[in-house]
Image 1 (cartoon, helix red, strand yellow):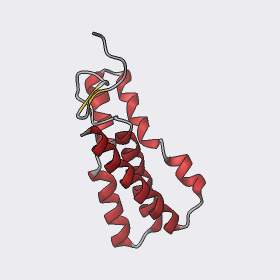
Image 2 (cartoon, rainbow, N blue to C red):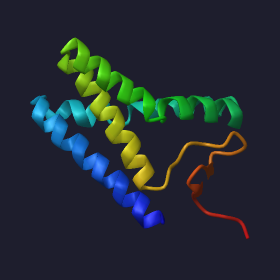
Image 3 (cartoon, rainbow, N blue to C red):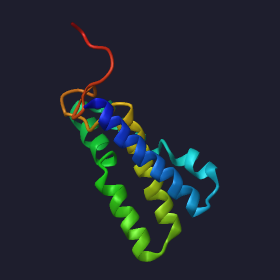
Image 4 (tube, rainbow, N blue to C red):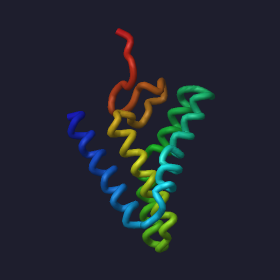
Length: 119
């Protein structure tokens, strides 16, 4: 099942890359903005709960999809670019196994545990 989920996320990532190419923006924008959603991890400096909430807000697919819809309705390519990069980032994370966080610890995600595990 995990392989199937990873293939699904890779497919979305490829779709985002193709769409970004279609927008004809410089690839430096993609590279420069790709990891911006990870600023949400500063919440972990407070505690696991705050970190999880911030991370989940910026890593939930509904927000970049709403940004994409808004960009389409407004015919705003900059907004489309932001939504595309954001969705690509989330799909990349999910492809690597980084899911939405449970609020007890960074390693506990909706896709299972990540990182080294104590046995």
